[in-house]
Image 1 (cartoon, helix red, strand yellow):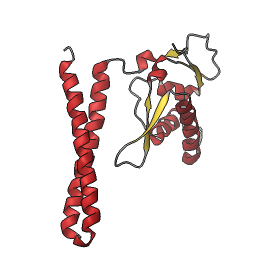
Image 2: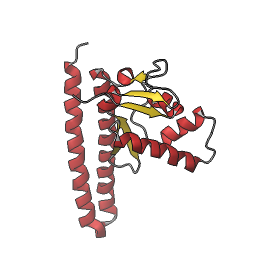
Image 3: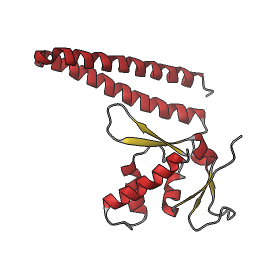
Length: 182
């Protein structure tokens, strides 16, 4: 069994990341929340982004967050892992033994299967719609640009295959949700 990790965080990042509703986010979303909470302590947005990114990178290396790239999107997103949920996070300047500010994260994670499945379903449906839109556009471009036929056909097939895969994932999650107790 893995021991519980004790992780020290910047107090404002601690407050943001231990919030139950803050999961599946980008660097810029976290930066904006950080800037708002600190009243722009780091005035330059690029410097703030670099600071936040360095903190995220550290949490990814420790296995508390996972970095994901979504289909059809250029930005990576970050999601809390089970290790995040079982770790003890505490604000910088506090000792791990000072229980007043220490957060054990089970409450800030989606232990509830229903919440987890609905979140995943929402993400998969968005990816499915993106893939369908992409294949529709390749199909439309095929009639407008016959000279690019081979390339457009290949891309159309790839996006159709991907949308079929995503549809399978949506159906799997929906069938699990149907089995959940009311």
